[in-house]
Structures are given as C-alpha cells and as structure tokens.
Image (cartoon, rainbow over all chains, first blue to last red; front, side):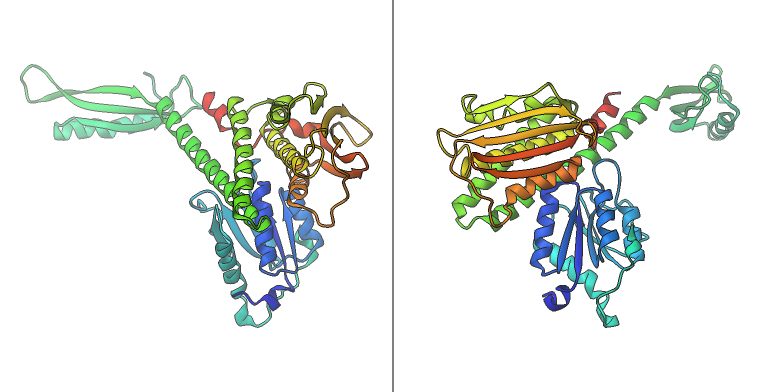
Length: 140
Length: 286
C-alpha cells in the first residue's frame, strides 16, 4: 500500500488529450489519497498549473494529439524535482525519453498499474527520508 | 542514366567484384541522386552480371539491370507510419473504453445499470467514429454531429436545432459530439427529455462580443421537471466542461433556470479548424 499519510500532503497532475482518460487518471490518483489532483488536456494548461502549484508527481501522456509531445515539459518538471510517469499508447518510447529518470505506463492502464507506478516513483525518494520536495514556482 | 559523381564511386566496386568472381551480383541496393533531380535521394535495385563473348570464359564486360524502387520505399515508409498511427489510435480507443468501464463502475451500484451506461457510452463513441471515418477525419458539419445524438433519437417534435452551417475538423467534432451526448443523456435521465412534454432547443451562432470570433452554442431544456443546481458536480457536467474547455479552449456556463437547464458553450471559432490530431490519411493519399 501507498503510505496515504505521506501522499495526502502531495499534489499530482495528469495530462492527456483524451478527456475520458484524463478524468479517469484523475479519479485514480484521487483514490490514492493525493492532496490535490490537477488535470490538463494540453501543454499550455499543464504548464500553467505547474507554474501556480507545487507538483510532486505528474502522469504525462507522451503524445498530445496535435503533434506535440510532453517531453520538454517533463524535462522541466524533473529539473524542479517532480516525479514523472509517462503514459503512452505506443509500444516503446522510441528512445525519446531514455535520457530521463521517469516511470512508464502503457495505455490502456488500470488503477493497480497506476498505483504501482506511483508507489515506485515516490519510493525512489524514501531512502532520503523526506518525501516532499519543494518545487520552485518557475516550472513553466 | 546519367549519374552524379558520388554514385559513380558506388558503381566501381560491384563491377570489380563481378570481374573477379565471374558470378552475378543480384539485388544490390543503391541510394543516390541523379543529375536530373540533384536534391532528391533515389533508391535503385541493381543486378550486376558478367558478359561473355561467344563461348569464351573470359569476361568482357558487366551487364547492369536497374530498377528504381524509390516510390516503393516511400510507400513502405508511409505504410509504417500509418500502421504506427493505427496502433496509436487503437490503443487510445481502448484507453477510452477502459476509462468508461472504470467510470461506470465508480458511478453506478447496480451491475445492470453499469452495463447499460457503458453500452450507451460506447455506442456514442462508435457513432462519432463512424462519422469521422465517413468524412475521412476531415471536415464535418455541426448538424451531422448533433443530429445522431438528438433528432434521430428523440424526434424533431421534441428537438429544435437552429443555426448557420458550420464545418469543423475532427478534434472539435469529437469534443462537441461527446458534450452533446452527455447533455442529452442527462436530459433524458433528469431533465427536459425525461417527460413526454419536455423539449430541448440547441441553437448556435457565430458571434463576436469583444472576446473574439466565437461559435456560441446554447442548449435550453424546457417542459421537464423543476431543476435545481445539484450539490455535487456529476460526471456528465465534468465531462462536458473538460471536453469543451480542455480540448477546444472553449467556455461552458450552466444556468439552472425555472424552465429547465440552460448551458452556454463558447468556442473560439479558429479552434474549429485546427488541424486535427493525426491526419496521416492525407499524407498517405498525397
């Protein structure tokens, strides 16, 4: 189980251009007990959320439909301490995100897969004791 | 065939090899450019074979047979791209269906109700895709999007559609179709379409109130049960808002009026023609 007490102080963001998928992901993250779960369907909205709020973990669809990808955004998030989990409908990442320290979830995903990926991402920090990382507001 | 110097280099080696071995060299692939089209890579399949004079075993020359497979190569690349896009779309579709299943499981307690809700939503998804496939994911008319959800289900006695001809690309078409389906489902359950006397009017126009060029759509229910603003935002409302605001940058306002629910959706007009997501068909056709 995820340590719900720790999670309850964390904020999450999910980004996907498919409305049903983003709403589903949001519900899944809410069920895991995050303090706030933001949703966005395009890069502009996602960057605006990240500029206004501390995001501890982000679930990002790699391909955003209009030809853009979330990779540059993910790089910025990771640089400011956010844990990133990519979701993708393609079989592989095609090497696009090999340089990033991030999690990966294949679409379609279930709540247990998301829970496991979140646990893994957050667990990576547990050895360092403190889970909550203050993220500067300049993520955008 | 006149070839540019680079290509000349590539020709020397196989000719030497045929002279040395006396054996033909088949199906070698060469990429290069011609003087006729110096900016364009072309691909050829070349067979090299020894030429003997009479019965002599001595090789007098090397014969060459060349086939230009540039077009085939391009088609293969196109096909790979289409296959990848197809895979992406199928996965997306499955992700959508999965999300619907999770949602129905969350919202409904009765298993029969879960399946009903699910079946209706998947049907709506399929209808929209039929529409988009029919138009080859190109331009779609607003009336073609809303009629299957409204007049074709509830009849034109109960549904009034009015507005100018509006054409849009796949992404806004999907968004509007999904929003209208949710509004109609909601009206059939609780609002203007839940009683025989109830009516729904969907009117739209192109306006500019100073906020830019907009498509303004007004959904007005009447004759149904008295409605009140719900205490909790339902999935349908959430879906309508997320779709219209998130995917086409619009604004949704809900008004619970004595007569029935009224929803106003404003969508920036230029967003209706944004190049829809994945128009690989067009590049394939070209």
